[in-house]
Image (tube, rainbow, N blue to C red; front, side):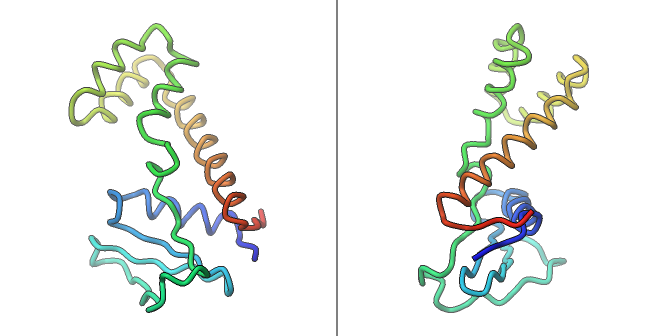
Amino acid sequence: MSVKFGDLQLAFDFVSSGGLGENRAILDTQTNRLYWHSEIGDNFEEDELPENLNDERYIEIPHKNELDLGTSLVFDFVREFLPDAYDEIRQIFRRRGAYGRFKAMLMRRGALDRWHDFSAKAEEDALRAWCAENAIKLVD
Protein backbone atom coordinates (compact mmCIF):
# COMPACT_ATOMS: atom_id res chain seq x y z
CA MET A 1 0.00 0.00 0.00
CA SER A 2 1.24 3.49 -0.76
CA VAL A 3 -0.31 6.85 0.06
CA LYS A 4 0.62 10.36 -1.02
CA PHE A 5 2.22 12.11 1.92
CA GLY A 6 0.32 15.31 1.12
CA ASP A 7 -3.02 13.47 1.38
CA LEU A 8 -2.00 11.93 4.67
CA GLN A 9 -0.82 15.32 5.96
CA LEU A 10 -4.21 16.86 5.11
CA ALA A 11 -5.98 14.05 6.95
CA PHE A 12 -3.66 14.49 9.94
CA ASP A 13 -4.30 18.25 9.99
CA PHE A 14 -8.06 17.63 9.80
CA VAL A 15 -7.96 15.16 12.71
CA SER A 16 -5.75 17.49 14.76
CA SER A 17 -7.88 20.58 14.08
CA GLY A 18 -10.38 19.50 16.72
CA GLY A 19 -10.21 17.89 20.10
CA LEU A 20 -9.45 14.19 20.43
CA GLY A 21 -12.25 12.22 18.77
CA GLU A 22 -14.01 15.22 17.21
CA ASN A 23 -12.59 14.71 13.72
CA ARG A 24 -11.58 11.35 12.30
CA ALA A 25 -9.81 10.21 9.18
CA ILE A 26 -9.51 6.52 8.43
CA LEU A 27 -7.25 4.92 5.82
CA ASP A 28 -8.41 1.81 3.99
CA THR A 29 -5.11 0.00 3.47
CA GLN A 30 -6.52 -2.15 0.66
CA THR A 31 -7.81 0.69 -1.51
CA ASN A 32 -5.74 3.60 -0.09
CA ARG A 33 -8.96 5.57 0.31
CA LEU A 34 -9.21 8.06 3.15
CA TYR A 35 -12.57 8.41 4.90
CA TRP A 36 -13.33 11.70 6.69
CA HIS A 37 -15.79 12.16 9.55
CA SER A 38 -16.50 15.06 11.92
CA GLU A 39 -18.59 15.16 15.07
CA ILE A 40 -18.65 18.97 15.12
CA GLY A 41 -19.02 20.48 11.67
CA ASP A 42 -22.14 20.91 9.62
CA ASN A 43 -20.35 22.66 6.75
CA PHE A 44 -18.27 19.58 6.09
CA GLU A 45 -19.37 16.97 3.59
CA GLU A 46 -18.21 13.83 5.32
CA ASP A 47 -17.88 10.30 4.06
CA GLU A 48 -20.09 7.50 5.20
CA LEU A 49 -17.79 5.33 7.27
CA PRO A 50 -17.54 1.62 6.47
CA GLU A 51 -19.47 -0.65 8.83
CA ASN A 52 -16.52 -2.91 9.59
CA LEU A 53 -14.05 -0.32 10.94
CA ASN A 54 -12.66 -2.91 13.36
CA ASP A 55 -11.24 -4.82 10.40
CA GLU A 56 -7.45 -4.57 10.41
CA ARG A 57 -7.50 -3.14 6.90
CA TYR A 58 -8.60 0.21 8.39
CA ILE A 59 -6.13 2.44 10.20
CA GLU A 60 -7.25 5.58 12.00
CA ILE A 61 -5.05 8.62 11.36
CA PRO A 62 -3.73 9.85 14.72
CA HIS A 63 -4.36 13.18 16.41
CA LYS A 64 -1.22 15.27 17.01
CA ASN A 65 -1.54 14.66 20.76
CA GLU A 66 -1.31 10.92 20.14
CA LEU A 67 2.09 11.54 18.52
CA ASP A 68 3.29 13.60 21.49
CA LEU A 69 3.06 16.87 19.55
CA GLY A 70 1.29 18.91 22.20
CA THR A 71 2.93 20.83 25.02
CA SER A 72 5.95 18.52 25.06
CA LEU A 73 6.84 19.91 21.62
CA VAL A 74 6.58 23.45 23.01
CA PHE A 75 9.03 22.62 25.77
CA ASP A 76 11.40 20.88 23.34
CA PHE A 77 11.42 24.09 21.30
CA VAL A 78 11.95 26.30 24.34
CA ARG A 79 14.83 24.14 25.61
CA GLU A 80 16.54 24.35 22.23
CA PHE A 81 15.87 27.94 21.16
CA LEU A 82 14.71 29.96 24.19
CA PRO A 83 16.22 28.34 27.29
CA ASP A 84 16.12 31.64 29.18
CA ALA A 85 12.31 31.70 28.79
CA TYR A 86 11.67 28.21 30.19
CA ASP A 87 10.19 29.39 33.51
CA GLU A 88 8.03 31.99 31.76
CA ILE A 89 6.67 29.32 29.39
CA ARG A 90 5.99 26.97 32.27
CA GLN A 91 3.87 29.70 33.88
CA ILE A 92 2.05 30.38 30.60
CA PHE A 93 1.06 26.72 30.25
CA ARG A 94 -0.47 26.51 33.71
CA ARG A 95 -3.57 28.40 32.55
CA ARG A 96 -6.15 28.18 29.77
CA GLY A 97 -5.34 29.99 26.55
CA ALA A 98 -1.68 29.09 26.80
CA TYR A 99 -1.01 28.68 23.07
CA GLY A 100 -2.23 32.20 22.31
CA ARG A 101 -0.01 33.68 25.01
CA PHE A 102 2.89 31.48 23.90
CA LYS A 103 2.58 32.69 20.31
CA ALA A 104 2.32 36.31 21.47
CA MET A 105 5.54 35.86 23.44
CA LEU A 106 7.20 34.31 20.36
CA MET A 107 6.12 37.31 18.27
CA ARG A 108 7.62 39.70 20.82
CA ARG A 109 10.89 37.78 20.67
CA GLY A 110 10.88 37.44 16.87
CA ALA A 111 10.76 33.65 17.12
CA LEU A 112 7.32 32.83 15.68
CA ASP A 113 8.61 31.75 12.25
CA ARG A 114 11.22 29.55 13.91
CA TRP A 115 8.44 27.93 16.00
CA HIS A 116 6.34 27.28 12.90
CA ASP A 117 9.31 25.68 11.12
CA PHE A 118 10.20 23.62 14.20
CA SER A 119 6.65 22.36 14.75
CA ALA A 120 6.08 21.61 11.04
CA LYS A 121 9.27 19.52 10.89
CA ALA A 122 8.39 17.71 14.12
CA GLU A 123 4.89 16.93 12.80
CA GLU A 124 6.25 15.64 9.50
CA ASP A 125 8.89 13.50 11.23
CA ALA A 126 6.32 12.07 13.68
CA LEU A 127 3.81 11.34 10.92
CA ARG A 128 6.45 9.64 8.76
CA ALA A 129 7.55 7.53 11.76
CA TRP A 130 3.91 6.60 12.44
CA CYS A 131 3.56 5.53 8.79
CA ALA A 132 6.67 3.36 9.04
CA GLU A 133 5.33 1.72 12.23
CA ASN A 134 2.07 0.96 10.44
CA ALA A 135 3.71 -0.29 7.20
CA ILE A 136 2.26 2.58 5.18
CA LYS A 137 4.45 3.34 2.19
CA LEU A 138 4.54 7.03 1.34
CA VAL A 139 4.77 8.65 -2.05
CA ASP A 140 6.06 12.23 -1.93
